[in-house]
Length: 332
Figure 1 (cartoon, rainbow, N blue to C red):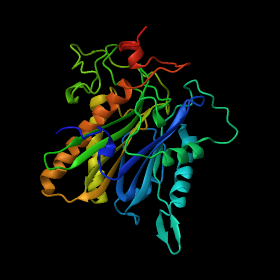
Figure 2: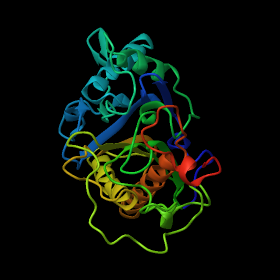
Figure 3: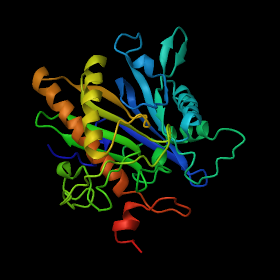
Figure 4: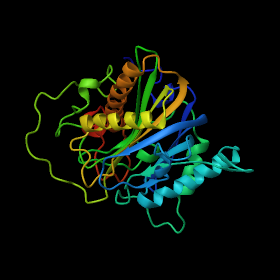
């Protein structure tokens, strides 16, 4: 496997991602959409999820395709971002046809960033506006690190952020991941610059430090409270998949989260993974292709998580150091 040209989820043809954030709010929203509706599924493993419209993604539900997925900060307030994305889709004439009416289908999930030092004393929710801006900004290229829904993200030790990565399989199928890392656990090993995801790193996409020479043996302690930590992700492929097959890819992708964040899937996290299939290419070998799609989804997600933390930048008023300020060239 090798990364795609951009090493982003948008290496899958037709996908676009948009970010919007507010530095004073220290929060933001990220939207994934496409040129046409796409198959999607979801799998939740964390104990404190916050979601919108995810029941529609079950394989037995009537709606088979959706128009966009949003990831947002703001805890439950961030679910309002879906309203802005829906309006953008409606203005574009997109949505599930019900007689003469079109209803955009926009599932989403949120992370908790209400205690990160930003100004949260709003009179009207800022998230519908952030959702609309993120949708309007959707493009093949987009910023990582301190951007979009990852703008105010934190982890157990270092700032979190927004990450993405891609892989091209020997079959020619492409897999990508997009993630907001706001975890209870850590992407780095102890207080070293090494990442848990190092065995799957491509080149020097998150520093090229390799695996840590020694692993911590102590049992980890929680540094956040119930409901304050969540890592939310989207994995995608250009393969033609059913909703059930997409759900299995989401399940497999959780392995990547566990490889890159220690600990993960705790009762205090709301960890979940959406899976998207654009249907651009049929499966040539359903057994081998499905097997490799799950593996690639897990490795892409692990790499994307490390990139989110590696690329986060320092901002005034930070409550945590960024990886760059702690270990990179801008360390003090």
